[in-house]
Image 1: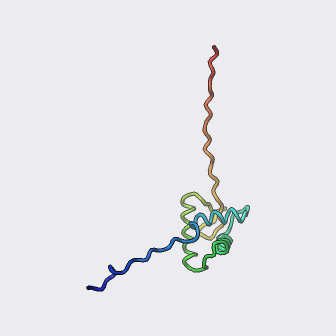
Image 2: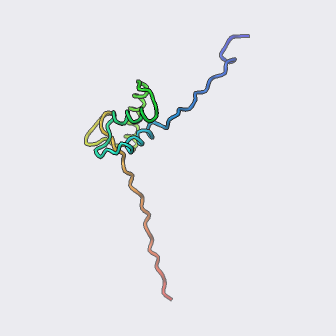
Image 3: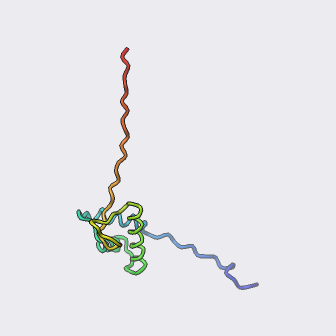
Length: 109
């Protein structure tokens, strides 16, 4: 019998106990209720305290990537020329699609 990894079963990674970073950022912006937008540090503090995450390079990198993806998708926007991942963020308001009401013409008999 040869020694190999075939005898060992692979451990499956357990799912995280927190929502996606994009959802956590959205919740932080809503909860902070800052009129001018929420700073990256304020969002980070909220996420670390609420979801009990570690303050390390992995968390910082994932937060930075989630902000960048959210801006690209149009979920978040930087306020007044802020650039990079350190500016203040706001949620983008989605315009409600209004259905046009068709006028019903009644025929008189």
